Image (cartoon, rainbow, N blue to C red; front, side, top):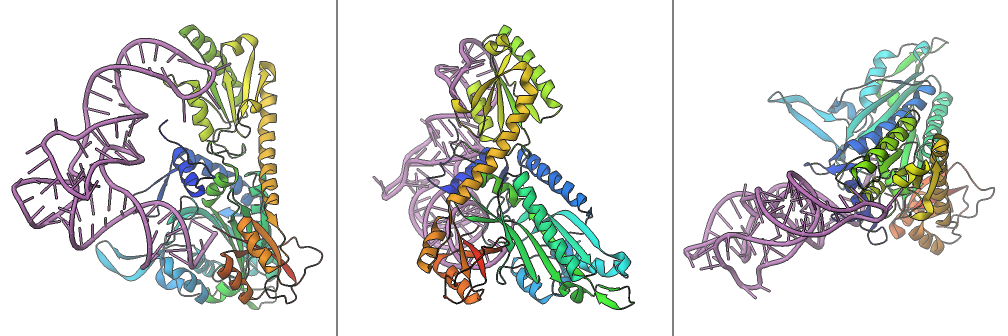
Length: 477
RNA sequence: CGGGGCGUAGCGCAGAUCGGUUAGCGCGCACGGUUCGGGUCCGUGAGGUCGGAGGUUCAAAUCCUCUCGCCCCGACCA
């Protein structure tokens, strides 16, 4: 056995890296913190893109593309924004062999360049709302990087909208957060907690930030998507004004929202096991792999013919691959496709051809337990059923895991213990001091103030003062 | 930036403490055969500026100095 995946229990971090490298999702690039997204990983990203893009279009958004290079001065226009991003900027100082008059930053996010354009485009209330999304790469010079979770360059989408009223912009902010939540749960089979970020955790330049937070396999939290309400902050910095219906000059109200290739890291950590990836059927690049089994040339001919028919029948509705490679044994292929997380495997051998059946093996249920025979005539319906069942079961399993590792501490000591073992929902007075103390003592941060709140909230778990809200504390990526 | 680890064949490593002349092993790769219902087995073969620079020495993967890079753990972040 050439490569082994480190078991999760031994070293979760190494397991994560092993799975990504061996499943060929990505590989390290020559430049520190950068990675190559390999074809299999990119196919996964394309499926994520499609599923999201469909939802963006359905909510009235259009795609556009803004440039990679941004004049450095643009970043400085919004005080809080520049403060948040300057430490991690890549700056271009030379071009065409000459030093540039003004340095250009490689976008870490596109608020400034997009808003500079919005200032040109918006004149009247009739120009609003502007609902633009872009799929792009961005660069942030992070100190510590990790495949997919935090790379120097990453792919994402960023929606940037401008509205005539605060209410409308806030509605948009929450609508898109909800799109993310629905996407995560439906497509990724990943349950998430939606809520508002605390003032210290919010986006640089936003009035309010919202996020969806998911529990990874090591019980740590991962911010899987964010949506920001900017009010008129950026509009004032960039001079985005319009004449309202009363012929009054007014600043627009804005939002931005984004998810990144980090979602691939989330998929790995939410569903994967010691054998490798387990991909949710709705996003899996290959939903069904057919592994034919034969001994001699005659069997090979018969089996491959049957396998070809199975492939043809399923390909109308399913992303299916026939692995007819001669050079690998069936056992090798089983392991290989399990590592790559293909949700459903079809085995066809001489016995199956004889009995007009196939063997179906679920990736999410290892061993004999996950295997069943299926008569050839029931092929399409059974495969569809199983894929749907796997999708649902993955979600249910992830939800159960999160619930089993979620705690409701009443005291500070209980909180400290709880965040060692998972998510902790606890009353919080809202003060930065209490938030900082928890971080200092336990390394856990407030992830979000969930929308779903209990009927009654006790005193702040840190200081004992009255608390209005319950907050989610967790150690996070 | 602080702490730790590592750079020797495509990958994973041994060799270094105690310098010695053809630098090994496993996997992978190529070819031939064998096998195929859970990572078959056998044979043959190709493949190396020992991260880089400088120094010590009759002799350096090995000792010394400098340097570059990567990974992991922290502080920062999607």
